[in-house]
Each structure stands twice: as C-alpha cells, then as structure tokens.
Length: 198
Image (cartoon, rainbow, N blue to C red; front, side):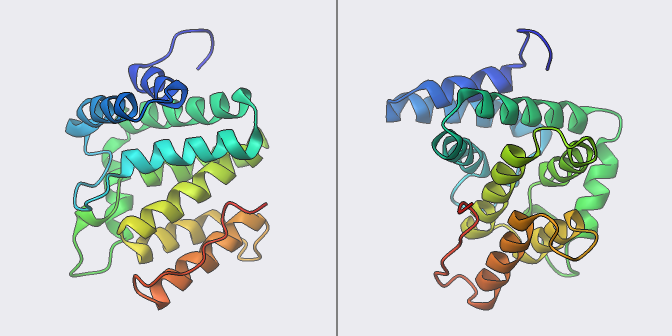
C-alpha cells in the first residue's frame, strides 16, 4: 500500500517480526488469528495454524534477504492480497479453491487465501516487480502449509498453475513442486525440502 497507512493485518505482521519475545509473538499471532477468523481466509483443521506459518515464512525472508525493505515488499503483497480477497471477487476465490480439491476431500483442507496469493503473484510476475522476494516467500509458505497438513495435492495443483509453461521457468516453483511431490510420496514422512535454498 502506498504511504504510511497500513491495514491492521499489515501492522500486526510488522509488530510480529519486530518482536523478539516469544510471548509477545504468540499474543500477536492470537490477535491476527482473531482478526482474520471470521473471513475464512485460512483453514482451521490443522493443529499448527497457517497464520503462524505465514509469520515464520516472513521471518525466513528477513534472514534470507537481510533487508527490511524485502519484508515490507512481502507485507505489502500480503496486504494487497487480503484486500483483494475481501473484495467483490471473494466467492470466485472460494470456487477456485473448491475446484482444487478432489471429490471426497474436505473443502476446509486448504486455506482459501492461497488462491489469492497465487493470482496476486501472477499479477506481479507480469509486471516483473519485486518478484524474487515474493516468490521466495510464497514458495516457503506453500511448502510450510503442506508440511503442517494442508491438502498437498491442491497446493501442488496451485503451484503448477503458477508455472503455466510447464518448463520450470521460475526455479523456485520447480523446486517447490518437487518438494511437494516428495511429501506426497512419503505421505507425511520427513523429506528434505529445499525451497529456501537459492
């Protein structure tokens, strides 16, 4: 978002990253959960919360890129995605999420916001704007969500949709797909994800 005006979600994410105390971090995570709970942005079936994984993926960006500007880019991306999700197209995102899920599987096995993140990434990809940091964060988040138990087949289909050419043009996407396939193959057994490696 332009200027200094930030949404409450973005402000809390910034506070979460700035906090070095575990208790404060947990309290901010709880506040974020309560803030987005009614929107059904994130699934609620896994024991480990997706929102916490989003914060941890942001912490990875801070470590990997060592610049607060990189985190600001991702927080802006997240904020833009939330705004888009809450807009008039909200139900089309639910429909697109439902289309990713195989018959007989629960709709609640994947966070609906992931579709918006991917569509927002595609928009940034067309602009070639801030692509490296956003791609790294998004791949980290998607893999983290597979690991905590979100629907790996749906997330794999979503990742494959980002690589429409099928040629692995974006290295991180090819690696993400390989890592998800590994997790599916070993169905919960430990695989050595390498999304964060650049």
